Image 1 (cartoon, one colour):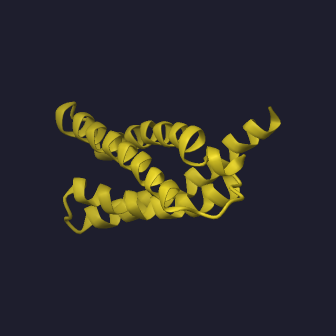
Image 2: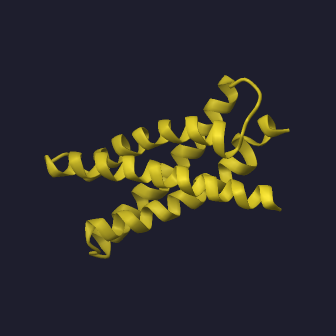
Length: 129
């Protein structure tokens, strides 16, 4: 039980770092006029690479050597998470009229939930055994 709680805490710490990378890149790009969907793809990709390294080694403490299959699974889960954030950004900002920062925050939390579940129970599970 302690191990599971620690894993969740570590995921949250890594997630905070990823979110900071994501927000900084997103708002830098958006501030120079890059469309918000493209800004989201770029910022999410930067956070995703940070996430892979830290979650693999520190959060889930994967012992075995990284594999192409694992990395492809990681990319897939992150594409699902990215899709979640893009859809929510659009729905909340464009259709519901929510401010961009608030829309981004809600979309980010939803994306993080998808990412944790996929990473914990699919991507990194085999390497922990």
